[in-house]
Image 1: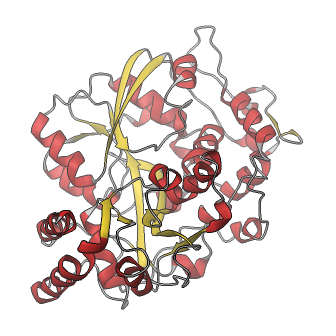
Image 2: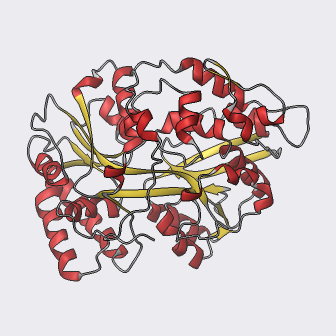
Image 3: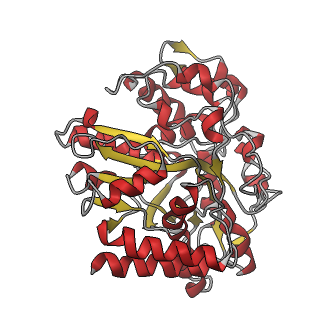
Length: 418
């Protein structure tokens, strides 16, 4: 696990800087690419055990013509059947990928439930003691060792995950699971804010200004994430501090500030504020980058003006998280879970999902894939980050301060409600 004062291993390919220089239109100009991705996701439904992309002899058509790039990838799909249940973060997959496409491609019907925090995920799995009924869960990396200690995850059968070779090596072999026996990268992202500049007229450029806006122009119209590390983070990030500190005195000061000075101004603790933003409930929200990106589209769909809203990445420091697909102990459909995860590790399917949730999915050559399959994707600068921004991101740790973080959030909720 990367320590807060150590340089972060680079998580954004250098070559993506060229893509970042192209400002995509907000309109869905990538519709043709979306059709191409859907076509590429099709599989042989004749009952065979595998389907292939262009590498298997079929033409893969992307926007602008046949894709030579995709010929290097193997799309091995082990046909599954029955029902799959996934417990994950809110609005985290393209509805077609957990719906009609999963059914037609893999023969599985999916049920998806949502949680707001890793703590909620772990509590529910631990209480169920192997009878949760879930086949797939999506924890954040640093929580995986704790889940293994509690006996909540089972080993992959890697022979059923051949598409793991499509994941960029920099997103594999992380400290929480060095051999990827229990987890594989779903995607990664960061934390920042989104605000209505017609209401909050002073620009927000760092966490200190975000917290001042919470107390000021955004008072009573602000949401913070419903996740204990994320509410503690800005207090330490604002001064370049260590958000993983176990120092009791520092945590005492953090609690006093957040409970006494910040919480009374918070309207809601909301891990997925994009819908509420579009409905006019918030003027300022702490948000993960993908959900903030979705907010712009939802504002437009609701008849609002996306240009009134500003996204900002946290500074001078902020979070870097990576979520991972895992199979919990007691999963009813282990075969189907492997097949679905393997399918999501197909580059074409991964990019389709990325275009919905707005997070970097960890595929090899992702810049080339995006340029080939979705050249007009909107707001790519909210998905892929240049080196100078990534250098200021810090991963979290699960340590002795975890319970204290939870207590701070609980006290903030009481103070906000009062």
